[in-house]
Image 1 (cartoon, rainbow, N blue to C red):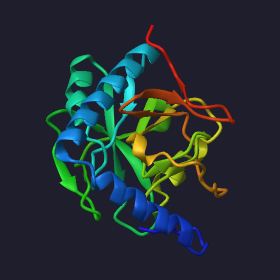
Image 2: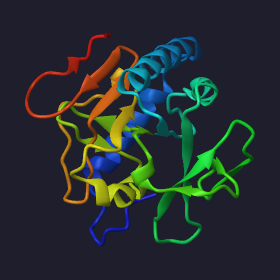
Image 3: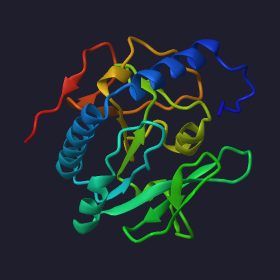
Image 4: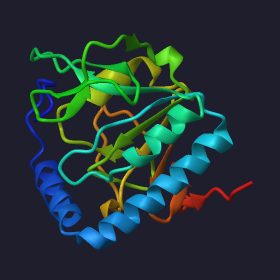
Length: 211
């Protein structure tokens, strides 16, 4: 799943992805469950405090934090939800499609569940986008799986505050600094088991206190 950019794969990033995914997958089932529950509660508060009425979510895959238990609660609260859907071609295109609790899900080419036969949702109709990360640093740089789906999808909103881009990860996935390529799209903040943190500049991570 390497990004098709015309560039040679970065061996450092390949190794770092392998290390961080191994670290993530080494969590015990009990600790993972506690972390996932904590992350879910932090995300719930963030969504409510920001008044996000439409949210692009993700379906967990290969050790990513599982916060799907809060999706149904969002639906009950009347928030519109969407999940990523990738094209079946090799153009690495990804869109977001509407998702309801009774929407049929099927596996895509990588084995990730995605909505079947639902309407696409434009980025202009999304208030907050929560995405899984392989790694992140305190400057807002993210490390994904390497396919570039999110970077391509979000290029048109690279310098815009909406949708608010929120990474979801465990604290053990934070690294000191990531090399940023010209096509990489930064995130506005990250939620881990310890809370919600804004990212950027050279300042330390800042927790946003509950209102």
